[in-house]
Length: 479
Ligand code: FAD
Image (cartoon, rainbow, N blue to C red; front, side, top):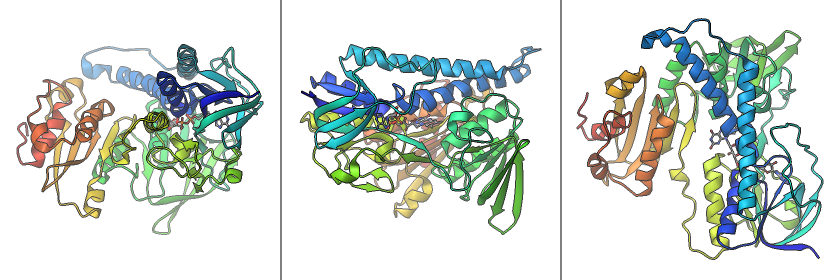
């Protein structure tokens, strides 16, 4: 007799494991199926290990600039193996943490590869993706291959690197984020194809450690989802740091040799350029893991590989839900987690608001950091909104100057008639921590008036947020 659950989640990434925990909190019997690593891409090969690498790069950068702070730091160097070891160790720690959370919440872990064999039923086969890293052990006391029944199945199978035909990663000269997170040796030069968050974070990391870095972006703007003005400021800083940036530039072919790669780049004006580097990091987006799950047989609707869901995670087939990367953009861990909670609470019969994609923040942890929520200036105008825009530079903020971080800006966008905050965009030190202030504000449907009457602590970088709001209404005080 197959085990019977209220909810089975396929995939133990941030979408899947959070769904299982919320289900357990609501008294539902839950299991999570995982084939490779507890905590998913986010903790093992994404959000967390990249931040660990970037932290090493930041500390190294601070040591390099020690003189600016009246300090002496001589004879220091970095050890790429030790940097990678630290990052992998932190990934392992996260992985163990999720195993602990499953145990604490009495969620069964089923180890293997799941397919949905019939409505309300999954079949788990032996994983084709063996655990290879000691930091990522297979959890103890898992259930194994077999058939399992559940009233509701939540698909949270995530995504994998998107591959451009002819420029397939080979793990040697053409890397995806997997190899970029775990280089065997420190490359002297790196070409990065794609300037979204993943590409830019790796560009920033390798440049901080001294590599010659060239970023090649197909669109006219780097970090294409960001506000053009903020992306422009970030670009200037990257270029000042020695990163070469090509926009409106298409990699048409990559030649590989023992010495490295040559990326053949076509520019918008028809000019051609060859970029030589030790390696190419392919960072052209991710592709949803929606294959081999039995979706076609069940008639679950997909669109270019992404499972089509409503704001509560429902697919078109009763009892089958999808959350996280497999359910589409923005492919971010916090979006996956929030969708998980919404889907499970809906399954439990609660009345919950659906996902509001307009209020999902996005952060890039490069140097300088970039963070945003809501509409860009261009999008607000495109939507026909009559807007007010405020800006405040870090150079006019005492804390930024004291930190030695005067390059940065906060930009806020309001509806002129109603005062509704439509978007906030930032570049500079610690803005990935600051943005949440505006996310809360937007979620509470704050107006400019309320923000202007909110007291921000002094001296903090957050004062630039208030000044930006004041500036939108011609009332900035410190500039
Ligand atoms: P995943 O985390 O991908 O988890 C899916 C899980 O399902 C995997 O563990 C997989 O093994 C398992 N699985 C798949 N198919 C099956 C099957 N058939 N049977 C059993 N198990 C299966 N996001 C942020 O918000 N902030 C960041 O800073 C950030 N940085 C990133 C950096 C990099 C380099 C990368 C690659 C991604 C980054 N992301 C970041 C994105 C983030 O990792 C994803 O949005 C997030 O992991 C999605 O969560 P998920 O639960 O949907 O899927």
